[in-house]
Image (cartoon, rainbow, N blue to C red; front, side):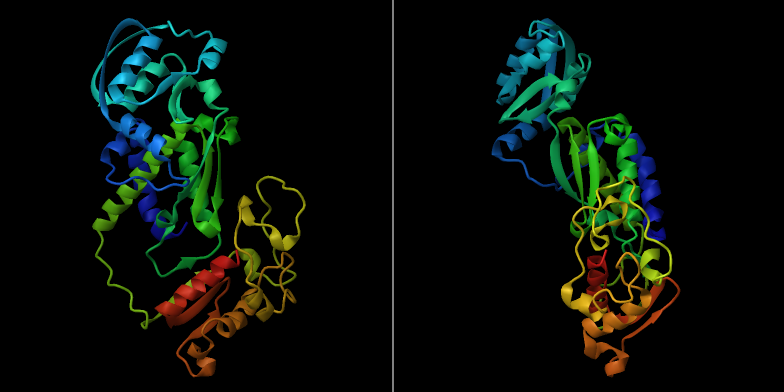
Length: 361
């Protein structure tokens, strides 16, 4: 992650470490829903609205089935007990519940009541299902969370394809949100970056997904507060010329005899070298054929079939706005600087260059 990102991420995480202690803190502060895909359907939207609504409980040794029936009528949603899963854990519908709670959300109330019995809740088949936490681990939901706005930098220095930004965000999520629920420590949940969509794919229980929503909402809120303290940048002029430094992964910057591409964290099945992605990436874009041919279709590339700095110096001006470069009478220049490219171009061309380099990852 770039220095400019670290400037706001670590203060943000200091605040978030407190927010995660109370999982619904961020939901109370949230002004708009955290985007994710797939979006909930009408029945689930009704359940989510009910979970966010206020409730009150006043039960003394009330059977669990009666508590559920009371909440069903009060919030006008269908709530069902997963009787088989409860029976397997020795929990009956007549299990007594004693609680007096006033003025909190239905979601918070369910966490308090069900948590004592090692139970949880989740939308399933258009009802709110009350089940055991063990069974909930067999009913994981998959979500795609766009996180591009959390990875953006404000500095002119651009880091392309290194993957550290995703790594740091993933590490924060798995360390602060239900840390025992992730597959790397024996839990059911999994998380992977989808770099060409600038998203995180997360498979987790419904309850943990809700905490991830809160976490990302809090992170965005903290980032906005920190940004409010900085001078507002003027809108970029497409025709304005600026110099930007594009740092490249080491395996791009080495010639054929140079450093090897870093190995993935887990050993995957054998793949053709050109299709491997660093750090276990999923679905990253492939080199566009037209640009690939500009680099000699692999001739002289490094052992992992990624371009060298020298090839990029030739391919970028030949492929992106050729008339805008100094060799054709334009103002644009490009030069290798160690393991980086120094490029002077208009802001519009810089955007095209960045998209091109991201497609090569």
